[in-house]
Amino acid sequence: MVSVQEQLTLIPLFYIDKQHFETDLICNLPNLNPLLNVHSMNKTKTTLLCLGLAFITFSCGKEIEDIGLATSSTLQATSTANLSTSDLVPLKSMEGLIPVHENLRSALMSDLVSPSECGPTAFAAVQSKYFNALAVNLVGLLGPQAQDIYDNYMNLGLIAAAYDESAQYFGANGEYTNLMVKRQRELEKFWNMPNQIRVNGQHTATLNNRERLADLYVLANGLTRDQAYVIADQLLAINTFSDQLPESPFFAADGFATTFRNLIVIGDGLVEMISEAGIEQDIVWTGILAHEWAHQIQFKNMNAWYPQGTFASLPESTRYTELEADFLAAYYMTHKRGATYNSKRVAQFYELFFEIGDCGFEEDSHHGTPKQRMAAAELGFKLAADAQKQGHILTVEQAHAYFVANNTGLLAKK
Ligand SMILES: [Zn+2]
View (cartoon, protein in one colour):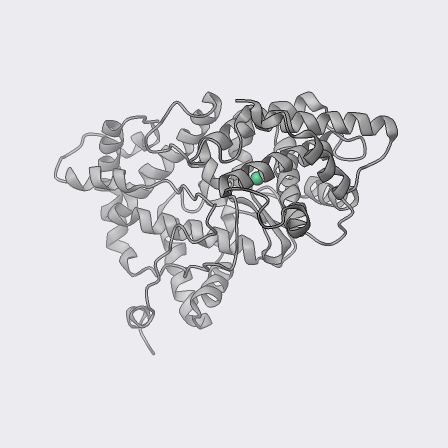
């Protein structure tokens, strides 16, 4: 019988490449290193803070430092005595298998460690509430290994959602499953795309599921089931020490469309965090689904709609396709035979969604400014209102042609 330690030394360590998606994904995983550096530089300093303070919101480095130390002195002693996380094997990167042109998660995670003026205030409060709790817990519990463990959980969550072939549920307790099933049927009918798109939910509970975790290590790292269980059990052990692993909404914050299996992934945490900034969950689920579905329409028509040479640069291409996705989504969301939302309600969601998106991507022009995106959405509202009078739904080709003919004013907006 090979011991756990011996088994682990047999397994090569694979480090996760944070930039492992296609070129225009700007994957802004928050970097915990500033916290870790602060922590390690001051490790001899004693602290009077107690564990309960871990949940106090902090906004500056000084407070992070104190709280980090507080939790480290209490928690880390416990955890390291029971568990050697240095032996944890990261899930192997599945580089190139899941091309993601845009992951909404990156927008949720911008400006986390150094807060900026960017983004809607209500959302910044939600974002820092969850991030502070997560960072304090991880740094306190895992010290210098917080970043690696965090990255591994992110990767596990993404690969789990991407490869999930089971019956899906949406919302942590399935509370949005009916809505999402209804929306998928509607979108299939609306855009005449029967059985073409798969939509997977993403849930933090997956990261506390021994069988699912083992599945991932068998899949990605090529381990035997028994080897994979050893690692799964380590992860479950870490989870018992932490109230953030895997419960933090950041571990179910993916939102993307990919040509891999014609898949859309929407995480419970992504929807929850956007919704907590003041928009009802039903419209957030629908809005994200409609936007990602529009990208699937574009993927299917890529060669016909955007033959090589259509755009001068990648940012131009991204901006154009994002604006068109906003337009197509707005058209479906307000159409009488689509999701039938009132356009004012959709506009409220978009206002938040576009402002968040504006912070999540590095170049100002990358996705269009919030004003350009709202103008694209308004074009969709108008088309839906006009179409309603005529009582029909445009085909994807007609909708695309309409956007091409009518988008010229959008980019002029600043
Ligand atoms: Zn998009």
